[in-house]
Length: 389
Picture 1 (cartoon, rainbow, N blue to C red):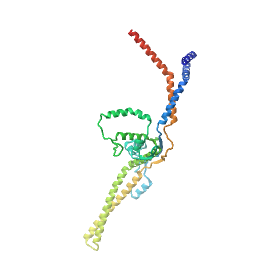
Picture 2: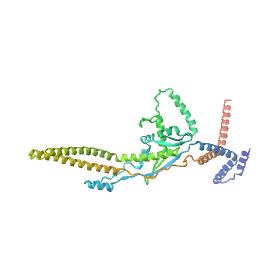
Picture 3: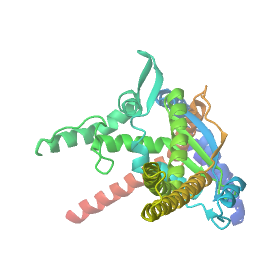
Picture 4: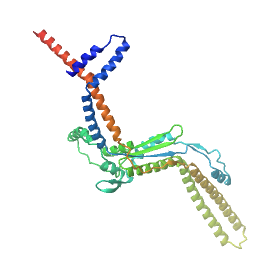
C-alpha cells in the first residue's frame, strides 16, 4: 500500500519537460524508491555485515615478508685481475662480458619446478597453538599445517566424492607420500599440489627502470615466511653464480688437471736428472755428459710446461672470481609482527556494499521484472487456453 501511494505521488509530481528533465527526475525517482524501502536496505546490510564478520574471521591469517635485491647486470674486468694478468704476461682487457642472466628472468627461475622442489626439504620452524614451536620441513608444513577456510572443504567435497567414485574403477597404484626420492620431472599429484602452493606463495617483481628485484613470500606463519625468503635469496645467488661461472669453472678444472699432470712430470724429470747426476759424479765420458744434457733439457721442458700450466690455472681462478656476481640485498627479510591478510575491515565493508547493491537492484528492477514476467506468463496461458477452447 505504501509503495502504491509512493508510485502515485511520483507520477503526479512528474513535470512535462524536455529529455534532460526526465533524466534528472528518473534519478530522483530511483532515490526516492530506495528511501521508501529503507528498512529492507538496513536489513540486507545487517545480514551482509554478519556474513562479512564470519568470512573475515574464517580466512586464516597470512604474513608477508618483502625484500629487495640489486643484482649485478654487467661483469667487467677488475683492476686486480688485470694486474695479475699483466704479471703473467697476458692481456685480458677484452674479456668483459654481458650478463647472461637478466633480472627479467628471475621470476621464471623462481617459479621453475627444479627451483621450487629444492625448497621441499627446507627446515622451518613455526608456532602451533596445540603443539607449541614445531620444527619440520617446508613440504610437511604446507601439507599438514596449512589451514584453509571452512567453505573450501564444502566446495571441494563433490570433486573428492567424484574422484573417489572414479577411483573404484581404476587399477590401484602404489601410493607415494612425501618427497623422498622424488623426481622433479615426474611429480606425483600430491607433490604437484605442494609445488604449486609454494610457487604461488613466492612472488618476484622486477622494476623495468632500476632493475631492482622485489621478493615477497607469504605464508600462515611469520617464521616460515622469513625462513623461506632467506632460502630463496640464497638459492637465487647460488643459481646465478653457478650459471655465470659454469664455463670458467670447467676451464679451471681442466687447467687444474693439466697443472697436476705437468707438476708430476716435472718432479719425475727432476728426480731422474738428479739421480743420474749423483750416480755419475767424477765420470768424464762423453756419453755420460750427453745423457746428462738430455735429461737436463727434458727437465727444463717439463718445468716450462709446468710453469705455463700454473699461469693458466691462476688466470682461470682469477676469471672465476671476476665473473662471480655481486647481488646486494638492499632490504633484507624482516620477521613480520602483523598479518598482511586478510583485512577484516575491507572484507566487512565489501560484504555490506555487496548486500546494499543486491538489495537496491532487487528494489529498483528485480520486483518489477518478476511481476512483468508473471503477467506475461499469465497472458500467455490465457491465450493458450483460448486457442484450445
